[in-house]
Length: 220
Image 1 (cartoon, rainbow, N blue to C red):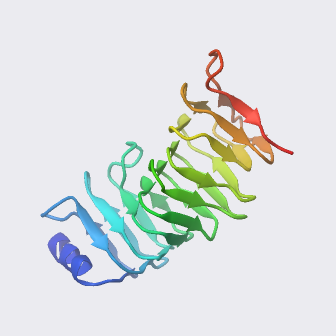
Image 2: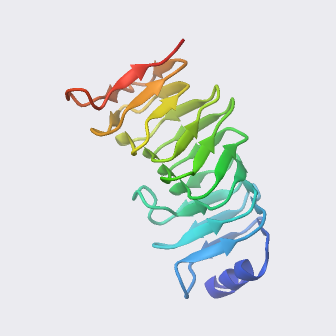
């Protein structure tokens, strides 16, 4: 994969990308993103870094992240990885980046650990979970559609996390294990449908306002 320029050219030329047992950096000299128009697969033991202000654009229908992926500007509320078409997402790697659902429906097919912000863009974009767990260390920002299934979202950051976005999120199970707390944005409403657990000193901070926001038990 040579240098940054060679990596960018390879991604633009090929429809698939597989990252094996080595370290690479996305830092294109032309534009701010590298595009993969087919299957993306990072193998366990591999490492991919995303430079400041750059983005990995994924357009394929199968996205597997078993390697480590890190972004220089994670937790800044923008995007380091964009999922642009309907896709299945899975993987057991350490993902230290902001992940955004930017087009279509992304379906999570395994447990997934994200050390960054998770964003669902406004419009017809959707994120679907079935029975799996998303463990999140950054903010939850939902302005699209979240299909909960019987899933679990665990907030485990080391600094305060925020639930925000223009769409109401209805979680199924929620686990909060962040001792710095999870904050419900002052203009965001949220509910849970299954159970809510507070672990390791975790707590939820709901602003004291009249009517909105609200955090509500939606269980049957």
